[in-house]
Length: 114
Length: 114
Image (cartoon, rainbow over all chains, first blue to last red; front, side):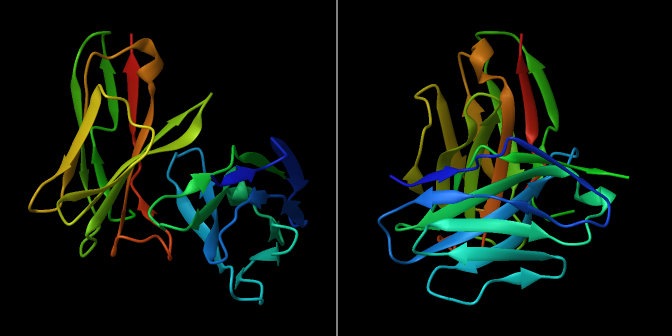
């Protein structure tokens, strides 16, 4: 069974600074997908970024980028130029094998301070 | 607006009762997924339907059941409710039965059992 671990329950950052959220996973699958979802106080789950395991190039979406280390089974999220609207719970998620479900980590609560 | 509609947004009910949560997937999406989010268990996959048929089951209790109708909307039925069933229930949808591109989530139904 796959597991996803987010070792940082809470983090804080000053506005305009850069922050990195950590995620590790365990799987025996070779082909899989990794995701970061954001859940702001509105509770909506929003897809931030997606990475395909067979692609070596790290995914980037505007201010959000990942550092995907397949051998280390590590998938960290870097947020540059943090904004107050980035305050949210961030979940790392894994999809592989049967590809029908997401396995989520416990989440990291990120607070961006003015 | 994600395009996935969940009703009701909030629900308060007593132990032992039965409730129905409704989900309309994003236009064109054939697959519906149900997740439960609680403080102690995090985000847990419950069940998936694809084009009207059950595709996969996760940690869904026997007291819970779901179905997907010909118009592709889905309902999650929770019966003999217990205090521990209090949680945020999410519906998500995707075009295919796989999750390679990530789901689109609804805004959730907050269920409180008293």
